[in-house]
Image (cartoon, rainbow, N blue to C red; front, side):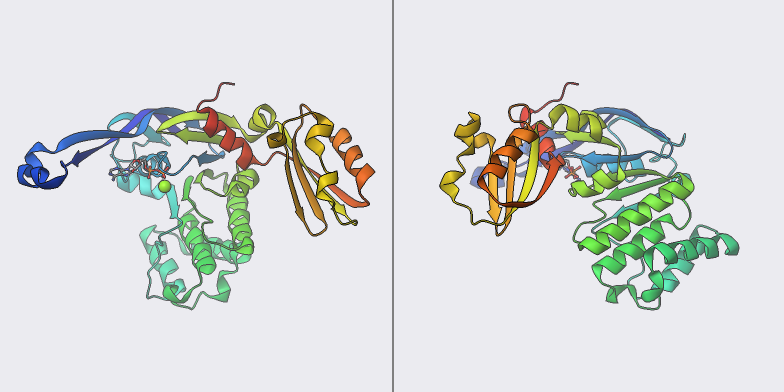
Length: 336
Ligand SMILES: Nc1ncnc2c1ncn2[C@@H]1O[C@H](COP(=O)(O)OP(=O)(O)O)[C@@H](O)[C@H]1O
Ligand SMILES: [Mg+2]
């Protein structure tokens, strides 16, 4: 569905010399600086896949999405979306895709929301029956009826995002691009967004590419992630693999009744590890310990804590994906 081959985007900047000399010389002596925002990226995404496109700020995520959606033309390389080259066939491409940018809306600000949907119906030349079917589907999963008569500018961010995702999916696009779709939303609103994306994917086998800083989005929606760093793809694989390979810590949360005596909790020396390898936090009754699972087993750690505290409850977690991704950034490259 999505084919990206040797995709590169360079931005050229002209940096003027500083100070008076720079002012006098002006533009003519400005130094040309080339920035490779996207650097020779290749990947293929099959129909129905939901892929997380993640990386630090400035890594090149949005620039990639802009080339995939046809907003930007590559410096070199090629993109094909369902056989179409998006930046050469914008109109045809637009019928096949839906786009949500978390920070911007595609809705008409001053019109009641219902009017925006009617305009989109006309733009996409949707038959009445199909439009009705889609609207009732989105109503069911996103409760648009609660605010469908209100002007878009009066909606809360969560409501507006629900409206935006419905608008981007109204014409049943084959590919959905989401650039930070849950940014700024509260927990409930985030969950609604994720549910809508999941249900759309199940119903229509929609292909989804998602950039996000919220790794819960990724964990819930994507079984494949591409990690981009400095314009290059440094990881392409499943979340499961990445957890196996890089998830070298476990976290156990104990609910303890006794007041904790910090000095008694000298776990680093008990287990003969460096104190930096342990992360111990205590909040009221909750004692949380992150530890290297290859050096200390869950059983050993649990036994040690049980000997010291009156423990009422225990929960065991795998390494947070945040931690894993942070490690990948630290190491700079990934070899699997
Ligand atoms: N229009 C532009 N002109 C010049 N540089 C740009 C432009 N857009 C992005 N960049 C640069 O390209 C790099 C990648 O940006 P972007 O794709 O927005 O990253 P991300 O979305 O991963 O945060 C950054 O260094 C950014 O400053
Ligand atoms: Mg971005």
